[in-house]
Length: 244
Image (cartoon, rainbow, N blue to C red; front, side):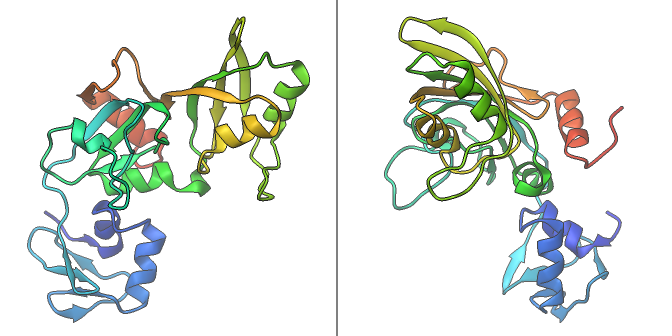
């Protein structure tokens, strides 16, 4: 393998964004073969020993990309203080994976699991504002004013104003309505907090898309590997490579 800039290797290993990895190097916290390096230095991930804060960093040997339909009652990531099962309990893969697109315990739908740290960082970092699409059931009939407010952005109880979102009614029912919501951010429990704020309590949340990746026909609890085409399109969408 040819030598690459160390900040790129660290980002690919999931240490952080490229900028965060550059900051680690500038702070003198990164060594290659026992020597503190400087920004711009290169290394061979297969031959050189890269250490951050005393921990050896090893890039994944093979990139893994998995689409999972998270069921309700599962955590999106490991939380030692919470005894609930996690999405990793559903996937029999020995390699450590990142969970991209976290969902709260009571929500379901698409989650991407991968060891591609660079892609994970790009899809989750707030400044990139990548699209995520949800089907949301509200237990009250929404009126046009409520939908318009949600589309413009809502000031939550903590003072944060949500970004504009695409909101449309998919289907109305006697006890509420299904909405399609497309967002470019993902604050903790944002959909539930927004619905409550404007008088539309949320009953169910199902994510059906992350960027170019769609949930498709995966049933609850099922998972599958992404096709090479899906990986290429997703990485191109994230700005990591050119789309063919």
